[in-house]
Image (cartoon, rainbow, N blue to C red; front, side):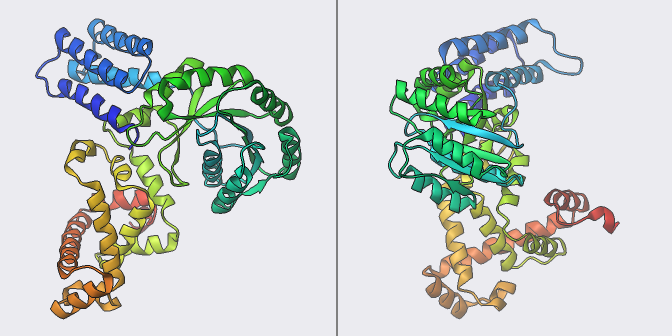
Length: 447
């Protein structure tokens, strides 16, 4: 989950308002102190924190809530709006033809992010070319080539050439028909004069539409000087924050971006090639505050579907009342492709209140165990698990390297899921809404 520690602290502070019988000045001051503590612990710049909380106090205590809105609802609204304002630097990544120049120091994830970015554009039906202009780091070209193969994007580079600007010039000619060209440049351990000179020469040749700075969220407030230096050198137009998953103190990086006035275009949320999200300030804050992001959840689900025809068949089977272990297996497979379970569940509104009650690692292991068990079943057993008695359960357990009790647990889970789905599909309104969102059946044509 993105900035897990900060999210928990913010939700704890806000819960004082939701749990209060009334909102007065004393409570507001207590809550703003809690917000200050949460943001400072996440390494957000002190002046930014003080300015943010002062705005919240001033608005809540001096403004009059609009008609029909209570003080509690209005206070929550103000807090949410001011948090969004803190990270809102403008429109995120633009999915249109463009040239992008990636800059940053060593170890920030620049090359990996270039590959992730290429995949993001291909998902929006834009042809992409990657140029390997990192001429100083050993194996940089090989790494980008491997990433290019993984995302099915062509890579241009000259491993034995040290003139980065010349490589870029020839790469641009090579990719003249590509809609998007991404240039991966060299980094250093510090922003030295020769690096500044090199990226300036590349910028002169490429004339990029975007100059994106890649920052590791874990560097905290040290990101500030980096962002300023690169901004002075090439005029940074946007920032990609990497390693924003887990407990990284990403507040420092957020502060750094805010100080340069450059917008955040994407955030890296994991190690997988798919784990790069277009930054949306409202959705970002919504997830931090436990509001989830259903549209992102639907997008992740669609991206996990390799065979749309098969997905439609599974969906139609479920809505027609047929739910076997085959459908359950497909669901588990798709869930696994969507990424870590914790990340997936964080997209569900309100789920944050249950996060401490779930052993995510154990649940992930159980899902893997269930898939192994189903792999050891016959087609007949998958169609009707009720035929699995003692001898069959023993054979399945031995074949999957599990125990008979695990097989029984799976069957119990299946029956529970089947009952729940049957109840949901019996609700016409819920059924129609779910299937329309999945985009698998045209209910309007049916009626």
